[in-house]
Image (tube, rainbow, N blue to C red; front, top):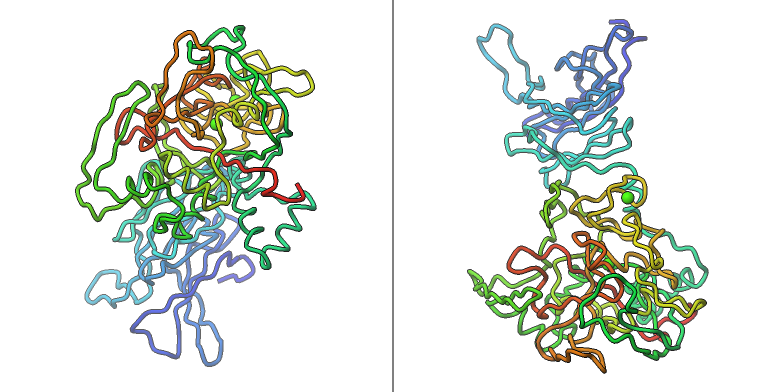
Length: 499
Ligand SMILES: [Ca+2]
Ligand SMILES: [Ca+2]
């Protein structure tokens, strides 16, 4: 073999349970093709005493297997095929038996091809396997994307559509960068003080200065039911409210901290609901269903639609499968769960007035915007079904978007995704405003939700719009239809010193 043209591109080591302690099989990936003498994946034996590697033997023919990885169980090997267009990944089984009497005798350590599938992007350059050995993670250098491909128990790769993250989503999914000095001080003090730790749980907060604002429909919004009237002045003290909807990454910390096992975070009604073997669901217009859980020990311990991979139908318009990253808003939460999270984080749910002031009040102009950015509808400024332009904020057909994806839709105070994306629970009971022409009072029945969601058009994604749900509903009209209600946190200004 001409070793100058044999370009080892990857190197992996496998431990057989039956192998002698003195040597281990090792595998090399290579670049193949006319300019290289590499033919695929090679194997050698590594002498553990001397560190010497035996001459490579071709274990499997393959095209540009520039990265290889052995399954944690030692039985399978996965290799990329890196080439210009869309690449592929292949699965091999590692022979642990020595064949007898076959035409082409197999040797221990040979690779037997199992199957191949597209890598979900161009130029796959790296693979790794999760610690339980059920998913292959592939990075595609050429297209700037990453894919997750499930692995079957027999080592083969599941064919069909896999989960793909493109570069822009990966960037958005990165944790927020700490940019101001006071945040850095908070991080430094984290180890000293429990109170500061609670601040970190609250995440990025926006301070809304004390003062009056105009709440409710201004009469020129082009839409609106009687419950939005009359517009009225509300005076609020200084408070703070989440810059973003609470993300899945933040909510996971609540789960991991034992939030679902600690009654001190829950209201008595919330804890009772969580511990019950019955879940109540409700629609906006009063429909109620009860689902008896199959097993009373099967207690709720996460929101609905918590799995990363989702496929939401909404009002139609196609329903692509997508992956909820840690930077997507948590959805499928009941009022009780939102309330418990806020308590754990050291805050509370905003009141409806606090939410609405943060969403629409332009202090300079002393004007309440119809939408957070102004009085003209623009489908590119929030996550809603009319956003069809891939440029502004992406094109999130029937799915939530990572929080902060629509910077042009920011409210005058600097809050993001106040309308669209996830609906948001607020603390108030659903009740008519003082002076309403059609008074009603749903105290002890319905809580308000604000801002509408990824599935709602300009009528609902207005700041004045008021939705209402029973506290134990996580949205929609019944079990499973709860993929759009989340929340953001609020707290009194004194909670967060130095901001
Ligand atoms: Ca867009
Ligand atoms: Ca929202």
